[in-house]
Image (cartoon, rainbow, N blue to C red):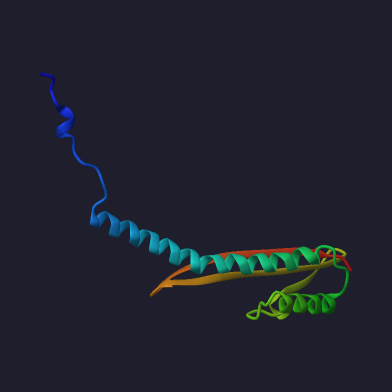
Length: 123
């Protein structure tokens, strides 16, 4: 008679405790994504403004006016063109905007992302 080792194999599966742990990890990742993704979406809108400034020609006042219009179009209310630094650089102007985006996750746990933008604008 052949041995019946296949009857003595251990069962494999997910326990209730394992399921709860996986659910907690998935919930935490979902909360993290819901808080962090808007930071990067906002940064993409600011990046598009800087991409438009690459082909722009004008003085500091015209740049501020264009930036204000683009911020209004992109529905970015938390910053204004005054937050953008415009300084002389070579024959033109250098526009920079560096900021830290903060997302509160849970309680006193936060995620901070640093963003830097810079473009040279000719007169």
